[in-house]
Image 1 (cartoon, rainbow, N blue to C red):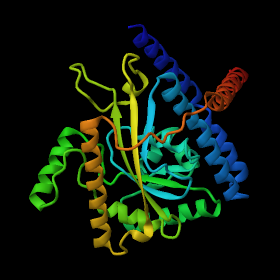
Image 2: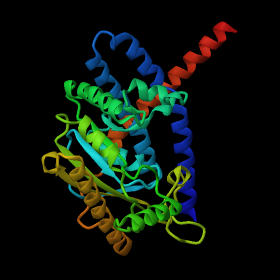
Image 3: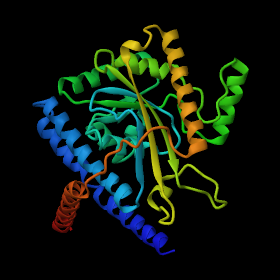
Length: 336
């Protein structure tokens, strides 16, 4: 009971802290964009990636140090290299993305493909524009050029961009899984219990756009341990569950990675579609193993994060947010 109460308090502190510091990145990026991007776009991108990476440390610190979520990595430890990452999609899987990226030093250059409409979300959308995240419109030819032009800039800046895509196309729910299973049965595809049929068009577009930029594909499979519903049945956590953990239970982000050379992937669309099916068949097997053993096969490769190193960023953002708050107050007082 005491452990549960402590974790609940820690979760509240984490949520309040993140709410407080989230106002700082946008003005920092906006100033850097106005002053530096017109002169040197590569230098600006490096600064934007540093700001992103440093800020996301706050999220990782809150989840792994305050709320006690563990990170277990098996398979192959992802190196710091440009890569296309193929993952199953269960919920707010950015927690896996960030916990992995902080350990292979790509926290500033990790990206996911974002729907174009997200640009209009106040604050959030503008920050993603300023950190040069890839927005897509579902016009595959247009998106391919957009992605290639953007990631060519990362190559010129010598930044190891790791682009995560979710070929299932949506977060998995029981209803969506049932629909995918029905479609698979009708079309003669394998009927899976743990993943949905992947959509190949987005994968082929991403692979084409990254031609000459990435040499490896990271096949990533994720799962969550320790979250249950009111009946004690395992469930996939939502954002609230990630912040409000139960100290009486172990909460683990499971992460398994298989590294594949792009040269081993067929060059034709039919061959690439077949590869993607095989990739998700491997994910199905891993998740079936997890359902029986409560972990993916292999030893834990995740290194422990240094609290002191994380606190350097956390304290910096906290102090910076206080300064910004007083600046806003002084501006407000001078006007009114």
